[in-house]
Length: 164
Length: 157
Image (tube, rainbow over all chains, first blue to last red; front, top):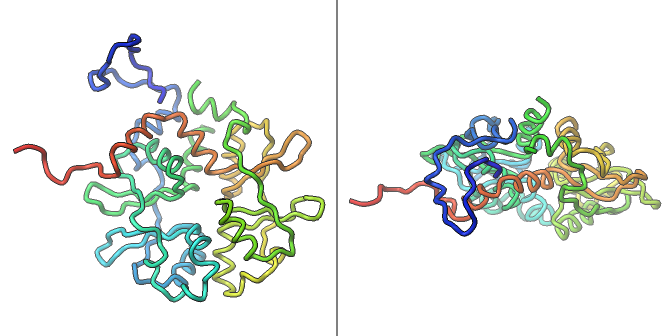
């Protein structure tokens, strides 16, 4: 990250936690990504389905909503997985008749990597890049589902801060 | 320069560019599914015998078509492809990729060379990797925290 901080001399150790200077950013986009929490991004609406919803029904919900990802939750609203277009491609398409009536929990991606609502957007974007995740669920400190960050929302955020 | 300036000035050639997967209009949806799975890419271009693009078939289209028609896998691509796509040139600024994705609602953008020939695909993944390069510190934080950010109990007595 391009935070302008004091440069340490070569070969000496500088404890990063001892640096209390206010971070400076090269431009408004870097500031928006690093000096905010996740709530500055659009995280809702989100599509949720129960663990026992069938694969066919979940696909129908996704198609009608025009979205690529359903968050799979239990009766207590706890997140257990995500079901995305990639799961359709990898686990459903070629055996559609065998899996369409199964519960979505069978073919969903289990235990997705999440971020917390107080994390900075830069962290979520890094997760998406390094983990190759397209959708990252966002939780609050009590592990309650707050929303989901997907490619379209990231693009909208970047466009807004690049053109303004 | 900062990230915003880089996006406005750096050319598309600095993004991670992916190979364009191509099939003919008479190939089936099943062939597209197998190719997309093999190459780990969510988009196939449908081209004529001269290699000219006629349409594209994406993961999203697969989902929609399977919901509409349980026999979609045996349909030829010419019946199910979409015929609009977004293009940028190799020397265009990266901001143009963002603009194409935002205004056309597409995840993939075709990259053309100076002669107008389609040479690669880019899009959301390329953008994410480009941005991640600007924030290496956040990557390290993620690598060591093992996705468990908060302790269940306070440390010590």
